[in-house]
Image 1 (cartoon, rainbow, N blue to C red):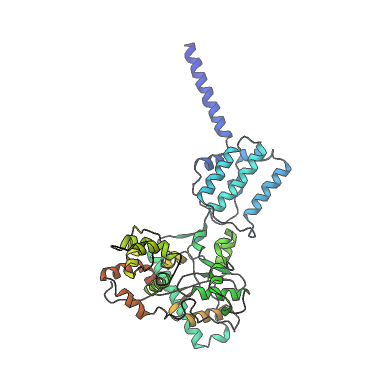
Image 2: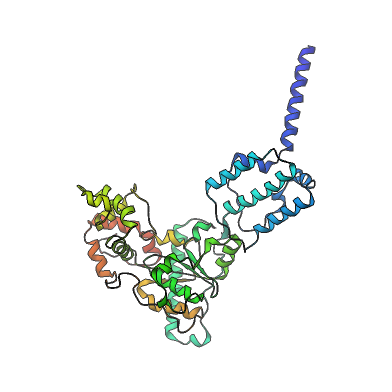
Length: 431
């Protein structure tokens, strides 16, 4: 009997000791170590004090020296500073930072507390999206000036913009069921920033993007004329800032105060333009990366030369690759959906221009934002200037090489772009 009582007392004492041990642990530190990929529901906002520290943490923080407390305060101020650009880190970076913390657990209490705050700040920046309620973005399309309201041309173009945005919103409302929007730096990675005239431009390849970048560089004072800017300078010079290069505060501020615009193009015509540019001319990237994979997968009895260089991809082979759910090589921005590139159902674009009416739409936009009167949208063809632009007629010639089934599947592939931007069916036999 005495032995049984002693055994029970030992068990109760051990259980009480375990409860005290768990109570003394930092719960947030346990969460970070056990589940580094845990999803926090937080948007752009100041960290709440009760999320920063529990009562136990507050008692521990009181023991920190004055210098340590100053360091902690500085790490929090960095989280709210717009002047420090922050980007999402990779999963490898997150794992390495956790392992770094585990290696140093044996250091003093002061260093552990400071590291905890720094790690929490990095975790918040890496994982927290920007939460924006549906239809909460402020419309930023400048209104017509008083002297323009009697101008039938400006009034007509302004009405066209209202109709395009209405169709886009209705399509998003019908096919996108989210009642709140979560915008991450990935969603704004294609958006270029011009701070002087407060413009955000989402780049859609093969829809005048090279010349639009030239215009943005002139607006920003980087060049005096669009004619002075070479193709490589436009695309590889890194003179224009991207929106994902800012911290969450900078992204949120610009999305809600700048004029957001994109220019789109008829999907089949845009696709043919990309194919002609990347596969019908010498290219030291698209031929070895995409061409070799496409020829190897879809061409019967391919020659060794074709397999070696990747040159000479046929349009039918390119479409086979595009429609293959098990593509031998991934997608590319030149033929990806506008819906994915610019996320128009997440971001309220103020101006939607079309390549088919580029000159009129572009110059109307420049007029609205108050650009210099001598700045107009360039008309010149950026590359292969001696070659005819891809037109509706040329597009139909390429798609005539396909079977009716392939044309239908291609239309289905770009269906949301056709619907969202109100383009007609390119062939009568499509449904």
